[in-house]
Length: 410
Ligand SMILES: Cc1cc2nc3c(=O)[nH]c(=O)nc-3n(C[C@H](O)[C@H](O)[C@H](O)COP(=O)(O)OP(=O)(O)OC[C@H]3O[C@@H](n4cnc5c(N)ncnc54)[C@H](O)[C@@H]3O)c2cc1C
Image 1: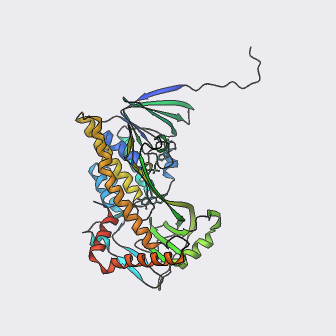
Image 2: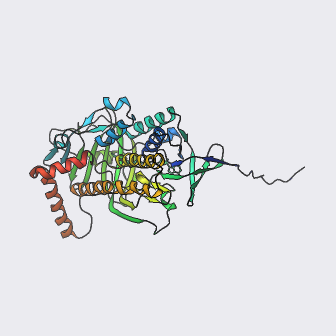
């Protein structure tokens, strides 16, 4: 009999699963990739470290570009609800004393944004994947990616059974966002990294408040940028430009509403307030890796590139990456291509990703007070930004180009 008082450590068992493509993350990039691979008869396993409810609870993007909806339609992945959601075809740039309303739908030849919350879209896509017999392991955290010439092994931890699982695959898709494990698993210096950090942050706010506008508002105020975006008839999203040393605790609800009231103010217009249920600090950065793969690891969505929310590109890029990656993998398997064929994914996507980065960066500068301590330099760049914004009304070519990039890069 063992009368030792020491706790007996149980060694967790290890299970091995085999598949063609192991997809890390069931956010928009991962679950779109999973759906399209499955439709093409390619074996895949999606893992996510969170439960389905936890994934749903993350309120994020809300604007789907027409190009994203077209891609989802192509694969029958558009929930019928999207067709009954409101669409946007105009936005407003609001100075304290005047506004520019951009009819971007008209300017782009009739294309629109669909207003549909990311959490609903993601959950619809998860449901479709599961309905088609897809394998999705919730609460499984990817911990390590090992690869050799013939394949990859992804180690993950099942938080429920506390088992270690090894997934052996031909390829791994890093769709696990900026803070996942795929990005840091690429050795330093193996790929090029391009990045920029901004000298201020955004406070992103969700409130139970009916929208006070029928289109997104980008307000340019001496105190800083403020944004009013739409979610649905009961919930609205707002953004406030704040200094980088401020914390969420520095922004009680009264201060938020006072700032939104001031920065968004317009004659004969009222901002309806409501109960704030989410406030989060957003560090503003741009990040792109080149190429979008390292050996048998292919990166998509936020894991491969980060963009500020300006212009609403992040979710859309993630879905479009997944579409191209899935199609490239499908051709590779069906046509028995050489592995170098998969370089096409990066070659096709990077020009679009850079166009989105450039567009978002330009738009960001158009509506933010420039950063820096040199007041002459700040004033000069402020005039340049104002000139750029004014071109929306003075240059038909610029306005058309802006509208095209805003509603969906083609
Ligand atoms: C407040 C806010 C507002 C935004 N607004 C917009 C907008 O209006 N328009 C727009 O286009 N974009 C917007 N974005 C950006 C958009 O939400 C992201 O670009 C999009 O979610 C990227 O999708 P993804 O699939 O690449 O990554 P994610 O959505 O981050 O999904 C990654 C998944 O990987 C999982 N994961 C992470 N690590 C692991 C691991 N180790 N093992 C297993 N799973 C893991 C996570 O749980 C997650 O489910 C916004 C973002 C925020 C935060």
